[in-house]
Image (cartoon, rainbow, N blue to C red; front, side, top):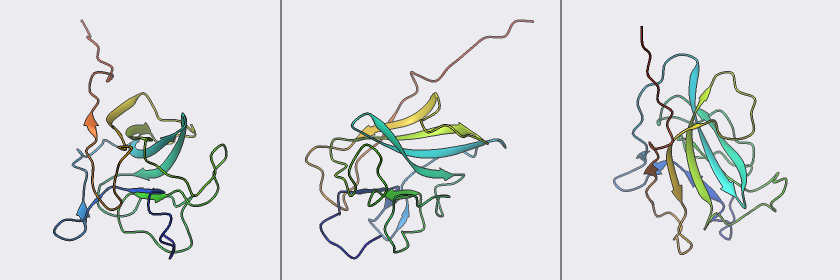
Length: 146
């Protein structure tokens, strides 16, 4: 979201570039009252990339992005507005999370439901995808007996 070329490791976009821009996430439709939210956890501090209902189309935020519009997919460039981390930042080594959040949600940290989690490789290349792993172990379960 800038014209600079020295901040290419400052963003994460959930987009597949091979074969033309297309959604990189395959997500089920959530019931009313729930949203997906992307996160970059940088030095232990979570920064939201915004909430979204589908993997196509922009999310609802560009809090940290530069002055230019981003691609029409969820994601964020961490260019300005960092609180405990200086932006632009380098996301190599950061943790990327997709959470399922209640709506409304005023928390500044991921909710307990985090179905996708991945670490940005320390040797990541710009504009190259990496996998987010399924994090189903931490999904709460329960039993109801009548």
